Length: 153
Image (cartoon, rainbow, N blue to C red; front, side, top):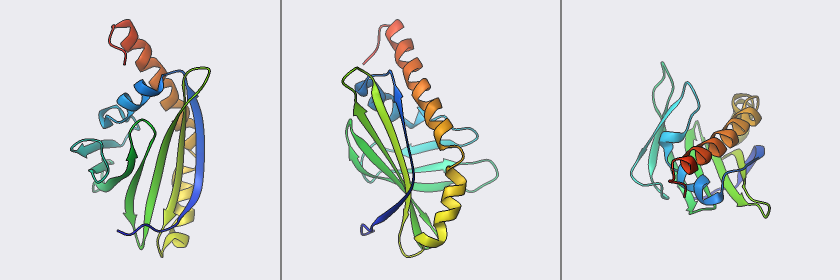
């Protein structure tokens, strides 16, 4: 699909004590994506063009595609909506004092974007900050556990 302008609707950032290298390695393994009751699957390596699915109880799997994967820095997940596209962009910034700033932006693009915008805001807005905080803690705890086991990245 051709690129179109994205209307960014939501954005949130959190800081984790986990190192950027660990964050990238851990978080790009979708087996670590923990967002109950959803489950996630990816076909192939974490690279631009790879296809994945999100499954929620009682619903058909929702397909998505990875786009613009920049190793160690950022990626986008895009999924189709009615006459629009949902775009979730993740970025990871190394902090001078250590740790990583995690940022997620959620938006819509395409001819039906305006019609989808409010549903996206309502669907993601209430839980975005809490979800990002949980991910930041998960990453810090996972790196600490890996260090203790002598296998940190």
